[in-house]
Image 1 (tube, each protein chain N blue to C red):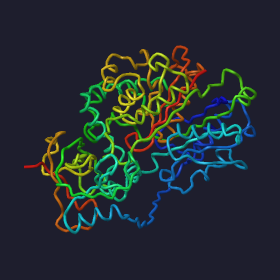
Image 2: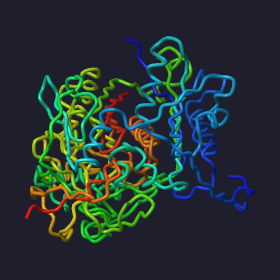
Image 3: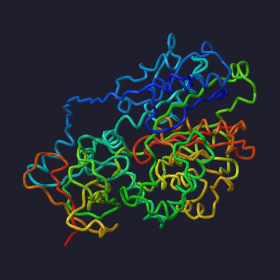
Image 4: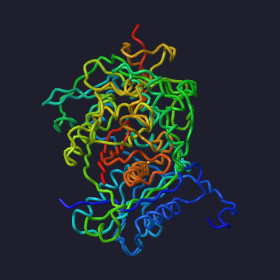
Length: 154
Length: 380
């Protein structure tokens, strides 16, 4: 390496990219979020070919590539398939301070898992296989955070 | 089918906070690759860049490295994924008959941005992204699911970290060579249970370039010693949404591996492969991927790791470079792994040279929790 490269005072230029987006939620997820916001219900959709039930609902069955026009309401309960206790703070990303628990919850009546928070329990006491239920926000805006978190079924 | 060879490799040292811009890193890796192949810039026909606009903070970031990658006055295209997929596209370009000698270069400056913010943006903004999930916390969910399904212990995960950081002590390019114990890994800071700091790969800067050529130009441009042949490749992807997959399932990798083995004529991977570079972004991943690659049965890799099968001096050395746990320039990683195998097959791997390997396997992933896999078989 030439000498001047070792001697140069390398500068850092701090920057930030801020670009607004307006993502359309689409017909399928809009229906899901409207039911959640307006009626406090968690809806799923089912593949006419393989019968798999998806929550959040999907536009197409991942297996059969079929349209999913068959809608059903879920009871809002499920089983913890896996979880993690997040220990690091990331205030611009995390809606809540660490430590907190993410779980993938296999929802009753569906064949897929739903990612969400698990709360009202000490993080160290969360277990795989634990039965949980959805707790909804009182004031809902029509997005995934209308589900506040899942808590152990009492 | 026409054969394609890797005839040159070039890498920067993998470090934190490298003082060069990403274009300067590409220039360094590419110059080294041309020198390694013993060819001039005029022998190169086109360039495949592997990069991500989000990581670079620049739209169409390959345009910004066209001169640094030797694409000025030529053609440059981009693969936004792991380097293994960039090499796949490079080979496809050559096999199409429309392109000559092809450079595949990848660059990454992880220390310039925020891995959590960028990987959070890989998730659906309409669903999971709002929850703040990222590459680390989603990996932790996968680790727990895998451990729970097969009864794998945190200590078995830790063995991967001990092995790979130890291997890195023989690799002058690695970022984190470390002589550590299982107790060190177990005692390291908890990040997202069950993952601790030493289960996670480090944020890394670096670049790597490969030179690909079809059989005729390969034989014309360089000596036999430099030529390493692409003998097989397979690739497959799983569902995007984490909840649509069983995160402990390696079906996509199994499919990718099956295709690569079929193309390379490998019937018994455990016996026929002499070394493997496997995508260990996190310790548990190496165990899962070793099973998906068919080196052992599902749930067996932890026990085999305990027996030292995958150690540097074991029956099947895995990640002799130190792996991604010792240097993880995202997207560069697959090319870095291919470069390592090229050096091993040529007998140019220095202190970490294995005993005359003839067949090497490289594995790359794309997407969260290994949504997509690419498997390469390289041979002399």
